[in-house]
Length: 248
Ligand SMILES: NC(=O)c1ccc[n+]([C@@H]2O[C@H](COP(=O)([O-])OP(=O)(O)OC[C@H]3O[C@@H](n4cnc5c(N)ncnc54)[C@H](O)[C@@H]3O)[C@@H](O)[C@H]2O)c1
Image 1 (tube, rainbow, N blue to C red):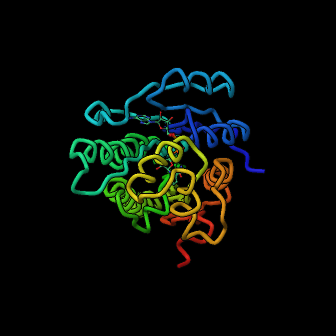
Image 2: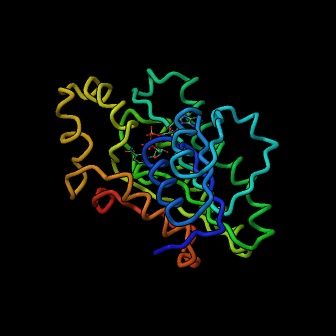
Image 3: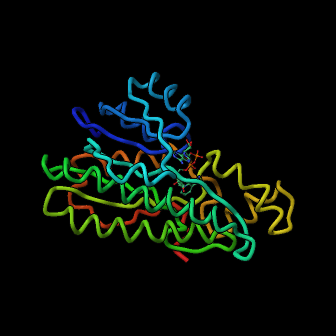
């Protein structure tokens, strides 16, 4: 059982889905957890349940993060959104927001947390990437671009952080049972011209050898191990949890 007693963990997007599962797993392992989320009410609800702290923040507003200083032993860059459109219809403003939220803000949070991690000689940066950090799908230009960028940022963090006891890794899930997935079913159905009831089987699970969605708790259990003391030699890595999708 991983023990995170005495560790302070900041989880972005911690009020829902994968982030919330990470918050619960880290808190159960003894960490003091900060739930950073746009949805302040939901963040406070989760914080109250686990004895953590809510931080209401818009991570799409990167200008406000440029001068941030962050106390964290563990940083989980997880907040994210999806938008499904062909490139020629993809709204430039939405593309820019996704890049800010899912690539620039992880950079700014890592930048804000590293000085403290270096001082203490310990840090765990966990970037919730995706199978889309390693593979592309049509209609997801911003998401795939942001996740591929996050893979690069994670590796550079690993190289710079290594001598200071700081590791940085990505987790690469396939489709996970969360609101982010539920919200894209209508768009996927329209763009692929199939009924909504067929999206999970025909679009989401086609490449996967294991024909089911990933559960948030499964992602959190890998994040917990990466956050703990036994993962010190694991850095610059990308851990797929995609039911075999990327084995193709
Ligand atoms: N669900 C999947 O299938 C899946 C697969 C692979 C990777 N991921 C990644 O996992 C991460 C979490 O996704 P999820 O499925 O748990 O989604 P989710 O929608 O359940 O949760 C995302 C959280 O991020 C928060 N958020 C959104 N915009 C924000 C902003 N501007 N500032 C601060 N917080 C903001 C939301 O309020 C929400 O609580 C994302 O980075 C996503 O790309 C998800």
